[in-house]
Length: 279
Image (cartoon, rainbow, N blue to C red; front, side, top):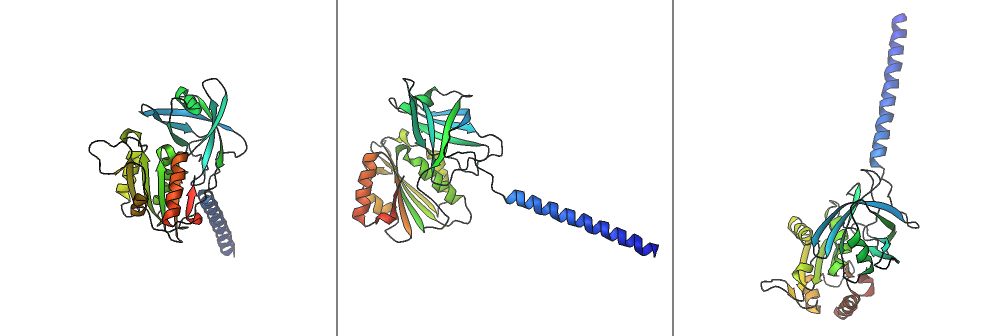
């Protein structure tokens, strides 16, 4: 009888240990699967510290901002942007939208690639920023919403710094193993030196040759050049973007004159308003 009682006690202890282990394992899985909360506030500006500034060219730099902890995520939905607040050369407040080139898979920080114009008000603020300074950021902002597989293919037409939302969306699509969406990008600039994120874009084209195609267009190309020349034309769009269809969408982002011209081209080719989106 004592033997049976001892066995009963041992069994009870074993069961209790097993229950605790299962509960602990379930809790661990729950924590691992829970999506981290983003650091952005849509209503109030928050401060983020500049931890690295890399000058890419005479007027382009990459700014790396730290998030509160090494495991924090920015929490920016794909295709949306943030508002940055700074001061112009006269000390007046200026607020301008920017799209990070990083995703929430890049934890602990976010990056902005900024082209700084001589007379740009926010450009002045970025030009003057030093490592250790803080940037006021609010977001997310934007109308674009993306779900994997919502279209068969995207056509993208970008000009200058308008490449940043395209790059963000393209990265998110290609780096998702469950997303088979194809991307066809036309990227226009004035000169070769004006091309932003070229190394990153070329690496994506190399790593995902069946899903990502890029066609560069320059208004003032170098002597040796195998891309497009001049302004983006209807022929270029028809050759390098998916044809009008219910399961495709054309995204565009560039200077206002370019956006207006591209909208006219797309209308003429037969893309409906539902097939077009302008950032």
